[in-house]
Image 1 (cartoon, each protein chain N blue to C red):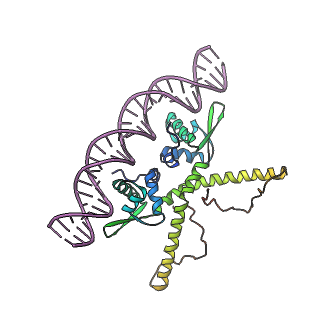
Image 2: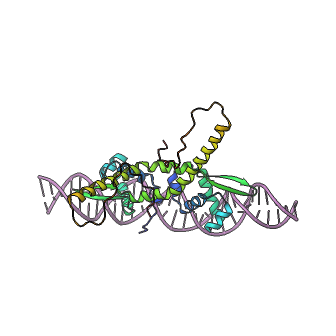
Length: 130
Length: 130
DNA sequence: GCTTCATATACTCCACAGGGCATATGCGTG
DNA sequence: CACGCATATGCCCTGTGGAGTATATGAAGC
């Protein structure tokens, strides 16, 4: 009865994140999730309920199974929340680079290939941190 | 003593998110945070502790105050975690648009102005969901 | 030295979320 | 219609995280 839990609280649960990660490739039935994640079926169903009521997933009926699929909106909200911070850290990378550039020209020592391209409005970090 | 709480658990707390959002503009002392967020000082300090131990913030000493500033890494991890989902939903937008395009050409009925621009490699959603 | 300001920590209390288990519902098939 | 598989729900129990309050630490200034 305590609806509207924030997106953040929903994904704080490791099992729920696991489920979401499973569904990102393709939709799955409860039983498939149960087997892949090795967790008891009631647990899966309960987490799916939370995810469904929070809008992270939708279910369709296929014979006696329920197929769960991902819905983009909630995670897009999370992405939106991150926006100011992305600006923050890219600003910092810029500052660091300006600093290094100054170092480079003032200290022409043996430097490995640093020299980053300095085109204006560098495209934002794409999240490929690894 | 229960270190290594996940990034997700840390930001599940509204007060902590508020603190992070405050710090994104500039560093702040504990007292400033306390006043702006209207929360008791011990609460602020406790949350700051959690944030510090999780690497979200760093503190420097300025006279009798402690200045807290944002550190990018943990939120960048979160950003990285989102990457697969971004791929997921941008794929879906593309599929939807292809679908609508087919509808458009096969069903020339009265349609409000839909017709989206179809330039290749559309720029990814910037998070402006509102 | 003592006092005051700024921050940190210790301790108690309580609500609530998740796990485990039993059981209900519901659809399919003989 | 009786049985079986797939999923959902209800209930109890426990751990833990956050609020509140009091108090400790520690630097400044007199």
